[in-house]
Image 1 (cartoon, helix red, strand yellow):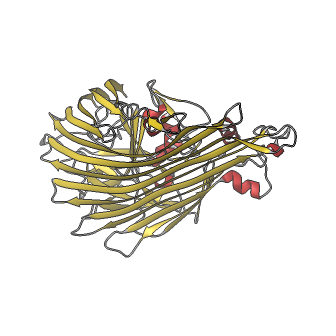
Image 2 (tube, rainbow, N blue to C red):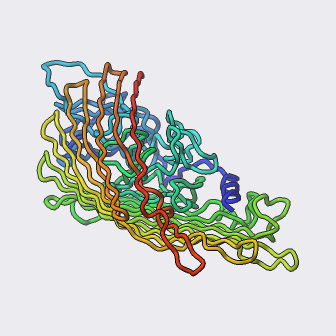
Length: 567
């Protein structure tokens, strides 16, 4: 059944084609400038459009926002600079007509102040947004994800272009990082670990044929492939640390787009709640299903992949109480194969069975960011997620083609999460970060199959719950403009069987020159087993059952990464 689903989805590839509401030779670049370590907004930062004659630029307002208007459409470059901070240049930014381009910038404070210095800066993509990540990490932007060949606006497919990363199958976006299992990849959204954000995903996996993530809604995010910073846990292979961008605070914008991921409609703009409050919402619907309704066929017959997803974010900054956001992402997917549809033009149905498969995934959360002052920042996130996969296979009788159930599955996972962290930037050299994460899991797992003698055998029929606690602390020290070290500790406690691990981690990065960087990092990492493994029951003839694997410890690994980059 799964293989037919993959074939049906891989039968259609349509590259995205944005459609905007107006055409003009000019647009605008907007964004916000923050201190990289403290995330405090920087006022008075200079933002210059390179190559403009005469040279044009703007300065950020007291909240760090800027709008550079009358920017010609096409590829443009900007320079962001501020006294006491290292300047940055963003090149080859694609400016569309009718839609403002958002560029959020994080500047790093200079360790040494000189009377005169000449600096040539470029955008360093191999450095992650999270300054605590030392090696094997890089940030990616929305504009970059759209440019990668074959990415289909999917961050996971884009990551397959990076060194040490390969795809498990062309039909899915599961990724293999340095030989590790795809199940070792962690998806994190707005500070909360989430289930696989993909349509038609199977329970316990991290990939799927079509991504639910809408690239138009993402802000600059991180992809990490080893030796994670102490704040990341319960993963062995890699981490996607995703952020949703905020809506336009100056005017309302609307978006229509047709692509492989679906027919898309989006809206964003300011709302009259507090200062600079905004909303952002995007909805997508299966492209193949729309075309099928119009009578257009792509060789899938009646087995048309049906999926839809919604992403939203409401951002409400206040003057004294901090910044509040509400975010969410959700998606539904379904496909059905009927034996009556098994014709010579349909390669995906069998004349001996009917089958169907569907999955639902929903995540919703609330965040609160508060600055006690320019040095201290707290971040609190609470969220709930729900994931369900359901399907069956009916074998057809050779005598009268009557259906007989041969396999069925219905797996549900509900998760409630909280993440609280404190960030303290003591000075330009030292930054400290600490936090705790709690995830409460409630699972209901049911799989059964018909045996050769005609009776049903329950592979798994179990309900269980457990809590995973994580804690972390990290210290970053900048020895100078070239040398930076990170050291910290991550810990995990699984309440199901009282498994405890302590994971020391450290990293060192040295900038030998403007285009050369040497990095070294190592540490211990662990991951709990997939929840179906813990709650598998052994059943006896008297009808009783017993959990077999609930005492399994966490899988542990020691990781050492070293990177040399010459640009």
